[in-house]
Image (cartoon, rainbow, N blue to C red; front, side):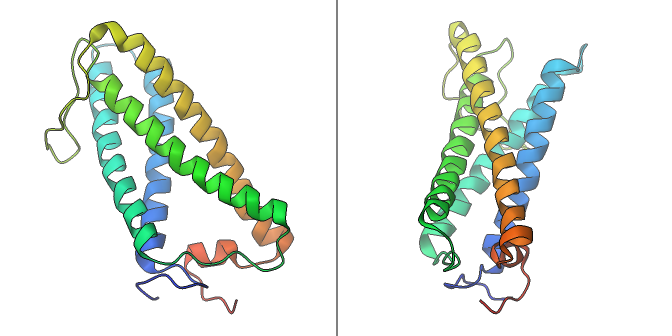
Length: 184
């Protein structure tokens, strides 16, 4: 598997960053919902700290992913796509990046506004807080929740689109993100 992307294939770093990010998004969304709706008791603060820690590292990975995307070519979409499909794919990817950043940054803002600030990543590194204004806690909580739910919805649309490319359109879009050798 090549390191660099080409006009027909993703390189292994792009594939790895995509799938590690996908797993982290599912973990963060699932854990975020669970800790706000089900978790109770004194362990709840530990869940918030763990969620913030993983969120900080996801944001760092997201920056790395975006830098890699800018420095390496992006494989072209299949030639048989209709203009609306190309537009939808481009808007969908832009929306995913914007919502990943918005959810992460709003979570970072939220992390400093509670009774206990959360400012360590999963490796124990201290992350500076964006704000510590407790009066804004509810606002940041609602903003973070809204961006997270929008991200979850767009992730579902993204998955449906990838499956559509594979099973209905019969093209290589999904296969090349899985790392399978394609002829196109």
